[in-house]
Length: 374
Ligand SMILES: *Cc1c(COP(=O)(O)O)cnc(C)c1O
Image (cartoon, rainbow, N blue to C red; front, top):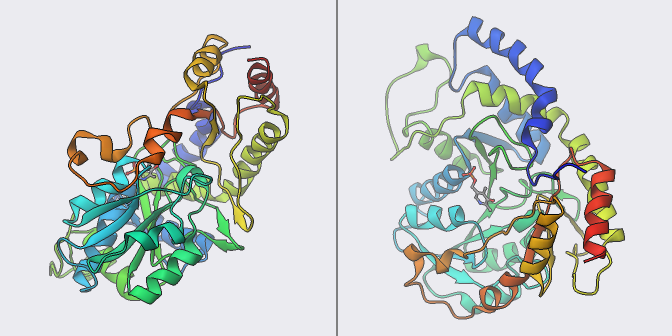
């Protein structure tokens, strides 16, 4: 058996490159490389996919989050120094987007079963200064969004969702992207629907947020499509975070086959869940009513480091998500944390196994056999 790679992007992308090249020629005939027809088309397609009213293509998911916070500030719903609830265990980008927008992260322990924010836990952390909740769908399992929204409605809080890992997931048959006030996606090459570079998107049902965020991504300039209509009138503190046409071409192609790719991924997951049987290994769970997107398959074991070494010796690459939680990083060391159960206990037990749609069942079987004989 050759090495089972954690990421196998060149294999995954092989089938797209031909179509990509053909469209590249077309793009050069038109000669509009930024925010052109392909991005417009992607925004329409992606909004439809998420069952949201609007989508905005941006440079990456950090920007999607940052721009959402900026837009809510322009709308007067957030101001400098407001507190934003964020889970202790997320990728650093979630927290950087909060501090980047001059807001204050309040780290909240996740539910130890799903690794995500839970409404009943959040309630203990609310103060007069809490103005927003950043819910992260870690590993692809959606956060407790329906209940989080109930708290938010009661307390007048904005709910932003970091869906960098949960494209295509659902809660009670509602698509991720249609539930939170603003949902932010990543098309980083290693994510569920990877571009050939950086890209991201915001979805929302709120036309005001849509218009403002769309303008902020383009230096805060009044929205236009035809260059003839362009007035160079800048109305918001904007940034440059425009989706480029090459990425939009790739993403339009990939969106067409996304469900098919997810079905392949689900087959591997089903195999793992059914056949991994080892007393020292605890498998991930899916809460009732949730559809998991399975960006990552993360097991729990108190023999984590030994198992990792053993799998590596047997040609199976694994990863840790994430070895250092954001509040343990140097820049956030001064943050006050009420409870650290997650980092002090659980985090040391987590191990991500390889999952991607180009993994064969034979390879999955090999992974399972090795874990079971550990
Ligand atoms: C990948 C990721 C991001 C950042 O996405 P980029 O597109 O790289 O900016 C943010 N949050 C989470 C949870 C992620 O996994």
